[in-house]
Image 1: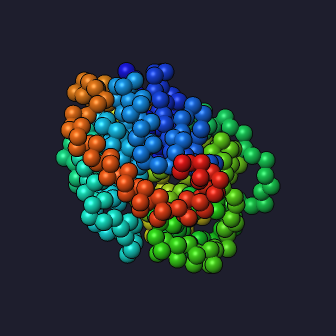
Image 2: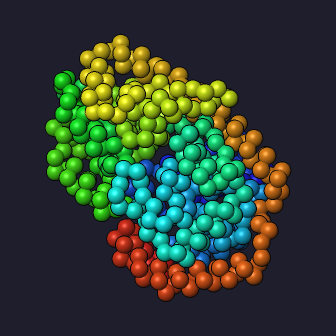
Amino acid sequence: MKILLIGDTADNNYTLKKFSKNDKIHLINFPRKEDGLKTLSNEGVEFFDSLLLSKQVKKIQSIKNDYDVCLVLGWAAARVAYLSGLNYIMYFVGNDIVTPPFVKNVTEEYLNEPVSRYNTLERKFYRKIFDAAIACIAVNSHYHRHLKKFRADAIRMDRIFVDNELFNNKILPINLPKKKFTFLSPQRIGIEKGFDVISDALKLTKTDFEVLQVEWFIERTKEEKEFNKKFLKNLPTQMKLISLIPRKELGSYYKFADAILGQFRYGSQGAIERDAAMCNVPVINYNDPAKTMIIDGEEVLPPFLPDSNKPIRIAEIIDEVVRSKDFREELARKEFEYVMKLSLPEKVMADWEKIFKKIHEEYPTINRKSSKLKLKIENIICNTLERLVYTKKFQQKNINAWGKKEYERLSK
């Protein structure tokens, strides 16, 4: 079976390709900018040579018949697959399904300002993209619950990759000076990750420690930008900002740290918590007892602590981790054993192979059964809007992100 992967989030498609025994898997991704140049992997990945949707569609149309199955990550990837006339699987590993672009003025439960403001035509277009997917898969109960609001056939797959070549217990720590107990916080700063809660919790701690906080941010809205500005102005005394860490070096930073500070909003684990746990380093991460995981048909409660994101409870766990070597070693052991069951690449890949096989049996061709004329008209409309509206609207933003010379190359 030949598989085409379009787009990526947190290296999930990259890791699927890397650990598959199938050498007929190809990943094509969008041009990288800013933090993506450091936080995502490049080996064996093809990149679109243009930011223009029209040229991305032409690229996919030129290669699509070489493949049997298509898996997309992210709305940009789904948009390309739809306009290319593909049958595609949509995979949700983050907030793409919590704040879908087809919902008017959609926002997060912890924000007042909408995350995006699409017009009626745009929302209808994205809903068509979503409905046209031959399958939709979400990781964990949180994202699956949101997916089920819109797709009765939503698939839940809790197993998710950790690249155990980059993250494992044998990695040597980076050689850096350490004056006191040190936490590493590699999360992006933002309300989404619970930095309002973290800030309050750190004020309540009684032990002496340092937090190395990576300096990168979630800033989709004015509200989030204002929060981050205020957070930096009142940076907790224990925190020290450090530069963004390249993904290839992150494992050695995990091993250098005495413990990891994860996220404290949703009550589940993301890539950072899983990667650190695979290094057998204790991770403090809000773990909602109601958000169990399903592994091999068994309901499992992740062993991460605390089980509440109240600042006082977080502070208690932080202090206990700092004070007690036995406590943090036992926590690390339980988290490591759990993530080995959940995220070991061979086990995750086995689940994906079953899904690919089942869907390919139902949809034996990558080409979608739809009106060619209708698809052509949709492409003409998109290309016209891109040329007359979007290219001009986002020109300066893209120049700032890529630099003028690179932007000019990518927009020809």
